[in-house]
Length: 305
Figure (cartoon, helix red, strand yellow):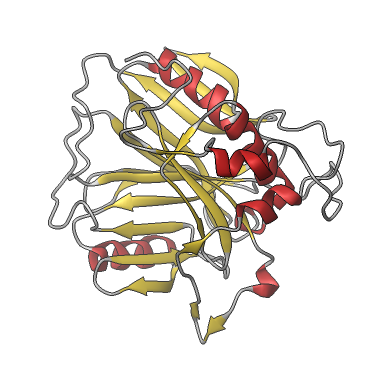
């Protein structure tokens, strides 16, 4: 179904409800943030996420969604693939395959791509944009280390749009970071937008893919693979259902869960959804490609973010 600017209310909670509109429709006084932003900590670690590739049944429709909703810009086209990003930084590649079967949420694959904005005011601007355009969301959470909103694109790919709290404010218990799922204080986030601000102008410079959350068959297998292949540290676990791993003390570059996909085997390459994840690493001198235990292609490229 072509994306028409509205998402199904049967699947999502509308952020533009009367209660939210009452406090969210306009910017308000808050702590001043300059228009210049720094690269988020997530992208400065020895290994970080660079880009995500999606196999799209309707790449044009999906590109329109990511431009209008997430605020990505079209950067290039090559061999039918559409590259989207923020400023000149590529973040998402849509690879068209009209014959692909729809993604199966019970299989291994993408839980969500998490787009990290540089500042809390940027997230507040996005919330105002969502309210003004009646964009549907799946939820909004305070994770202690971050504040995040969740969406689903027209082909069923999960999206997170979030901002990190300052790393020095994260709480660690040894080598494990404290994370939770609590109600986001949306009025406070919106109030961080300075009075008279120009509002949401699309994903700002220094927006990055902060992390990727994967559907897997067994989190312990994902944990072992990412630790062995990338030297990641395990920074949090949720029982036997989810694991979170990172490089350089970030709260997580990779999440892996079985909330929908327990026992899943290898991905069906004929389905839409996650095509590949590209990591950037200080530790390699040439591009590498490998597959995780579920057949998801993980690329690695050298260099700084």
